[in-house]
Image (tube, rainbow, N blue to C red):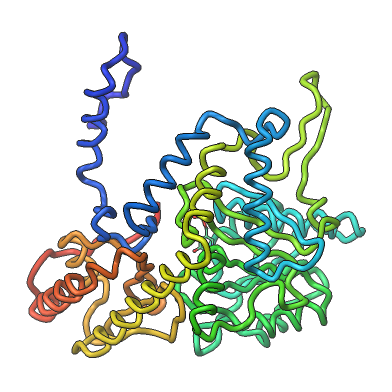
Length: 417
Ligand SMILES: Cc1ncc(COP(=O)(O)O)c(C=O)c1O
């Protein structure tokens, strides 16, 4: 029987009692505070959390829609964009906006590309966006919303985008190419330089999805990690998405979409006065834009600075390397590929990786999965440095259980929903 529908209480409740109830509601949630989640939450420590939270609270009622009313938010947004462009080799004239997350940034990139093509007289209904099979599903969603066709091209043997196969998939009806830095499933940076050449050769828009790497890869590179060119440094790159609420460590609801030029970004903007409410102009899909998310992003960027982000990147890269080495040394387990940033995957070719996943879940470790190969997906935060040994110990026990057929029966079907 389904639960009765919740109803608005007749009278208001006491906040202390409500807070307690809310806290108890969260008792069954994944334990991110103790770094037992390796997806959804980016835990850079108590001090960063405090800055993100207090900055959010300071501006939580202000509305980023109203630049005239809140020049503070307009200023913060503009400074965040300048900072992002500074990290991603934004050339003179490059620009961008804050959005609610990676999905909205990607939606804006695809929409802008489509509308620019339409303005140039191209037929865009059912036109194609060619992506590697590892690209985020947000591109499928964007194509679905925008009347475009997504073409997913198998990745190369090394699980990175295959520029030759993508070139073969391009036809006269193709508008956009996509590469990721890194892609979500494998944590690998696609060969963006080759994609940039291809984009220039075929006069296509290249979007680089740096939702995960945009605020991580530049600092890893400063630390000596051999991160290949992936941003506006490459002349074929038209737009970049980079999430502040991932490795920027800002509160949720903050990403950036960057464009090579204002002329290009013009096709992202919406403006109309076709109603009696006066002229409205919005840069992104949102109407109201949460002031808290803008303020939180601004504050965390300034709180950490280059030094702080470099240190976080160092800790994450070191933890990832340490965990991969330990996992490769365990019988029945292996890691896949050679990621450079904070994301890696591992699994087994002799045991069922999802059985191992289920046993780790029953020990309180929450992470993502990959289906090809069947693997466990780890997106690490700085806070994982303190729990990596506990994780590895539990992993060894979980693998031993699967080997013996002990422990929880049916594996959960991992999903994002
Ligand atoms: C590479 C990549 N792109 C896009 C997204 C979508 O971002 P969001 O969940 O913020 O919409 C994600 C999310 O994990 C991602 O990993």
